[in-house]
Image (tube, rainbow, N blue to C red):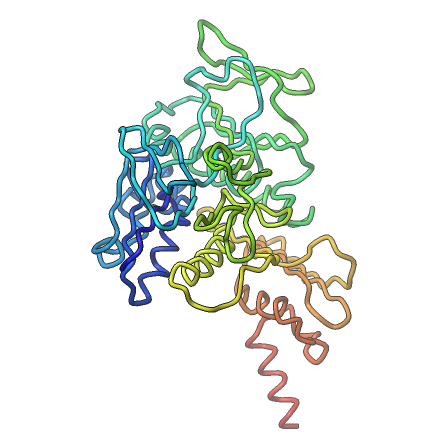
Length: 407
């Protein structure tokens, strides 16, 4: 008899899981419950929707074959409680649904500081398709927008607002942009590129108070007591795993829902997936680990053997209207640096070697051969034989090795 699978959450993680399951023959009956009207869209492309470069239909992650048949989508519906003992979930529509196995894929929420008056209309976030559409409808002519956060989310949001016509600035608490993924020089070059697009930056600054006039946001007071004009404030300072439903149901949680390498939670027949999860001390906000988790969980639901989910240094990629960024490996570790700088072309490359092996790569302005560098880092291959050509990419290295062998 086929099993009933309920997936709580209809985000990207669920889309990757359904894609993985669709590659195999199975008789699982799958119900997906999501609180947004739209299901399984690509949140990574929200900034493109904000900028008007893409429309909602472009974000759809499931084709008709994956989304049809045994998959039942219940959208615009929130799961209010989970009863693990009798294997049921209750929704805000008053429905009670039974399952054989449950997947918690509840995602994450934007992290926002605890500020007084943060309820005013000028304080927004960019996390959902509705957020992007709402921001597009805000009059931008002559308006000032401030984005809090100089990481991936913040820079993408700032670029979208800038393209909409807002006078846009970014507040970042750290000394340089994308400080988790880039070294200082790479972050400074990225800042220079974005400043040429019209975005301004205030580094090592944060918001301490919202300044209102007649319940309308007009300015921000920063941690140094400086005040700056602000009509629209967008928080993009990171994410918090959505763990409350899981914790209330009796699952073990910490910062996120605790899982093992096979995505099992603390309760039998219950799994967790994606941004809501925590393995060891690690939570997950990038696409690559979520996709890897989905492959592992698909095998579990299909009762197939296979390796578990492993922690690793996943690469980061960012593309903002022609500004290419790639980062992979252990940036802050000691080692031998190979650096290429071309200020005129806006290109910076930093490769870090240790004991003859590539351990990290930062590419700004030109990410050709990024996947090759990623392979070298992952495989820990000895690159001593082509160290002098390594900076110039795979084709050059292979050509020089071929020439050397023929000599």
